[in-house]
Image (cartoon, rainbow, N blue to C red; front, side, top):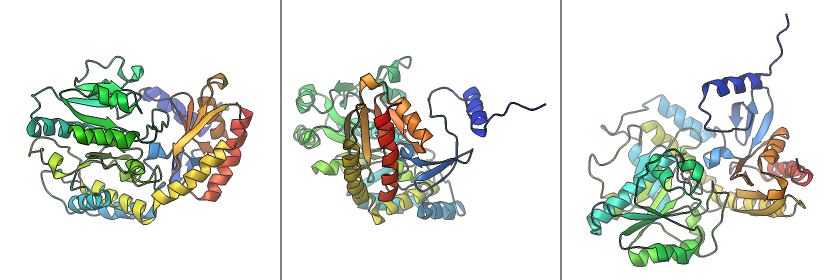
Length: 407
Ligand SMILES: *Cc1c(COP(=O)(O)O)cnc(C)c1O
């Protein structure tokens, strides 16, 4: 008997569907290999990766320098826990501090853990250095934020779905509209100790705040003794055309939070970075992570950072992104409401009348381009920063067809 033929892709999709929690709705593509800006699926089709794992792949898939560092470290030592020292963590943190201009860094693994670290740091700073009564510290956050998925973090999300069913939540957070300096200032209370903000909201739909927003809120924070905490997990490490997005407005945060591309697409590496004034609140036993600062992660982090700096990926992102955004804006399409972004972090907003962005992403997939919708109406284009202009030019032909034709 002849079996009904099922493509390899279909078989993998069915297996994942059966055995996984359904907490994602991925595009129906099953990848098995990646190199640079390209990925291949299990049926041999090649795609241009224009999502870059939400900017965790700024250096591209399997960058040779990062792979080499990872392989060499794997052959030596991979994990010590923080009960012992290792010979990679110190150099990693020094290089991270040199690149960012801060005194100290605390290594974690995922982005959410680095955000949690920043929250703990600023709260303890407020209690020990500012005399805020115990348990009263308040941190201001923005509507439409995305800072991760732990229970504390989703507790201050404004997205109903991120919270529904997961309470009770951690108190001590206050939401204000993103991009509104006056609303921020008005929300400051007696026990406000921190402001946690994405310098450009990625998951929220590639939302660029009005000019001056970061500069003005940072100035108010300085005047009022509030810690300015920049979540640069997605916007950092070159993505928006600067090493850090806060540089667009010459802002130096009090706490800088990085992740994603710090692991070069190889390994989860994140960090909360600050001067001693904040970092020194941590005493032995206050905070930790079994894997944070491990030698493999540290070696990967060093190589990932080096690639960003040595290949000047921030400048590349600035130049290519500016050009690419111009090209996208020039596409005559009745479906497009707006094209926005900075560097190679670009959102194409689909008009509500044309449906959601999802079918456009599916049409792009059929043409060999992987992009993922965010917030229903937005197609996000965020290719690895190592991409060549010619590759972007080719992609534009397909994007133009899809945006013009509709789906
Ligand atoms: C991805 C992201 C996080 C969470 O990082 P994880 O590694 O998924 O925990 C936090 N903040 C921002 C801005 C992000 O884009």
